Image 1 (cartoon, rainbow, N blue to C red):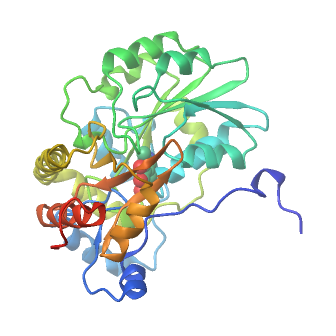
Image 2 (cartoon, helix red, strand yellow):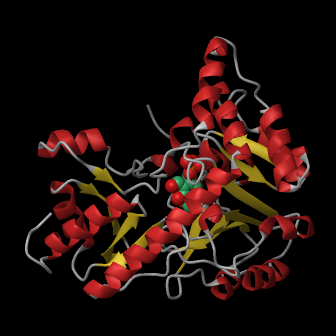
Length: 365
Ligand SMILES: Cc1ncc(COP(=O)(O)O)c(C=O)c1O
C-alpha cells in the first residue's frame, strides 16, 4: 500500500501525557496535569443535567447542522447563523479549512512557534508552510505580510499564541487585515480569548463584517471546560462558511456535545468565575517566577511559557517523576516549559515541585 507522499514523514500529534499513564509509570497516587490548558474548575454545573437529559436520545443521530446551538451562539455573538460552523473541536475546523482550500503547492503562513495543527494539516494537503519567526514571542505581522506571495492562500494568527501566550492588539490586527489582499484567508484562532483581560485585545467579532476573508476560530474546550466533548466553532463570511460546510462530515458533533455547549454558553457567570480565577492564577505564578528569578512571557491565556534556564525536557521529566505534568520540547524555546494555570492548590504544588526540580530550595514538596 502506498500512502500519499505528503503524510509519509508526518509525526503523530503528541498530546499532554495522560494522568493515568503517569500514575502507573511512576507509582504515584496524586498527579497534577497542567499540560493541555484544560479548565481546572471543570464545566458549568448546569452541564451535567443537560448531558443526563440527552442520554435518552443517544441512539438517534445528532442534528448535523447543530441548528439549535448555532442559533443560540449566533444570538450571543451578534452574527447570523449562516456565519457559524461547528466542529469536533476547533481542531476539526482547522482540518476542514485546509481540506476545502488547499491544493498541493499552495503556500500558507504562520508563526514559527505556534499551534502545530495548522502546519500538520497544511502538510497533509501538500501545502507549503512558511514559518515566520516570532518577535519577542509575539506574531511579527509585518514580516508575515512581507512573506505573502502569489501562492499564499491562508495566514494563521493564534491570539493569544500557543505556546507563548502573547497577544496581537486590535490596532495591529486591523492594520494587518487592511494590508492583506482580500483573496488570502486570515484565520484568527481565538481558542483562549475568553481568558484575556488586556483591553488592547481585538474585538474580532466587531470587525468581522469588514473583512470577508477573516475566519475566527473558538472552542468550548477551554474556558467552558468541555474539552472531552470535542466541540469548537468557526465564524466568518456566509460564503466561506458554506464552503467549509461542504467538506464537513454529516454528523461531526455529538448530541451530548451540542446539549452541553448550549447550557454552558448560557452560564456566563461561570465563564466570569473561571476568568477571574485564571487571572489570579497568572498573578500568583508570575509573582513566584519573579521571586525565583525565572523569565516568562506575559500570559494572556490559561498557560505561561517560562524559561527554566536548562533543557526544558529535563525539567519536564523531573516534574513528571514527582507527579506534575507540563509541556516542553518547543523547537525555538528549548529551555522553556509551558504550564497551564491550575487551581490555587495545583499552582502551589507546581511551584514547590519546580523549585525542587530546579534545586533552588531543598526538597520539601
Ligand atoms: C491555539 C489552539 N487552537 C485550537 C485548539 C484546539 O482545541 P479544540 O480542538 O479542543 O477545540 C487548541 C488546543 O489546545 C489550541 O491551543
